[in-house]
Image 1: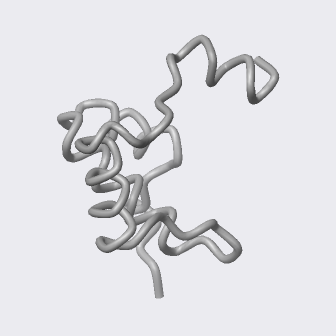
Image 2: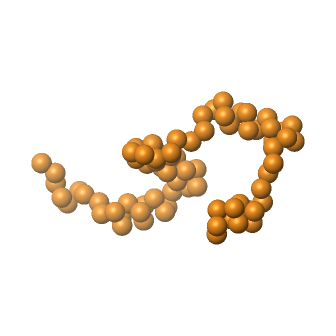
Length: 74
């Protein structure tokens, strides 16, 4: 049986997560997304390497932040 005095509220968890470093927050985010059903998978290592090679070779079309926002309707 759960001891409710040890249960944290979502607000408390969020407050604690806000205190993590950026790297720790990224790790927590990746972990939580991996647990969600229907969450889109991220690129695998091979895809990341392929994209990096395209950027390094100058063959990738890169977007500015403004272009990205416009493309997604923001």
